[in-house]
Image (cartoon, rainbow, N blue to C red; front, top):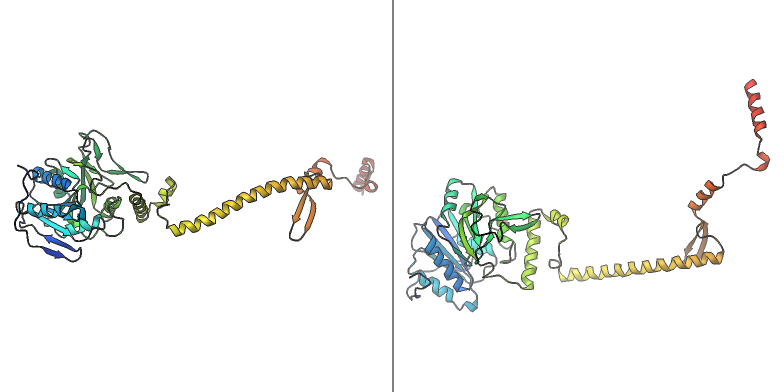
Length: 394
């Protein structure tokens, strides 16, 4: 009988330790012989948490220390806490962290879990993931062989069997899941990656400690785990993808939202990410960006007023210029001059009306009608030739 089928038993719970920094009660595991720490966040959706944890106990070969970080909302009615703390009676390798306030972002619960780690390695397995057999073996071997590896992302499959992500690559400035919708049996290789999903990954504790900045991004709406990859790489750590570890991922099943607010916060996170890593120029050159969700309402209102006035005035200017052109033509007819040769300069404020010849018309006239000396100074060819001969003789 597995844990999903086992009844929840009442009984004594581990003695809690309060973590002041994260305002969380910690119910620690009672054994300390693990090889790897596994962190699972819980935020309601007890059915997902149970599936995730049961798969970890069923399919993990290596001795592990399980860390559950729980900030379930009120509508969970304490069911997650009751199930986890009862599970501790049969699973002495389980540490339960009950946050008394919601985790503000992903790095908050990652850092809380890091404080509970007892091994050099910590896997992040979201409660929306169920692991497949022996998922951790190849990645742990890589970690032991290469001390420069900071994070290893695993192959995530959709529940229907196709690949959700086999690492993350950038298409221009847009992060893209590698091999999305490929057959699940593909992408079993091990390779370096630009980034990997932290929904299902193995990390070196030394690479994470002190490098996961909190409060930079809007929590739980994307981009923060990609930023974490960049932070680790900036410190010299390698990021790898390992297709020999597999999990089934139910994307956005726990905290996902299609609300307008979530979209706005996601776009704000994108802006933050591009600015942090000097990619704004590339983004702007590559595509227009909708920044309407980033600018404040006050700024947009002021700019909208100014731009609207400019647009209205530009339209009025075009209309006035068109009307003036027609009226000047009529005025030229009234004066009786050719508008191609003359221009009418008007200063309405000074009541000045000046008619001037056009410069290009003057040049045109010079080309068509050559200038000649006055009649009384004109010399014939015979006179000019006689003068020239006399000059030579002299």
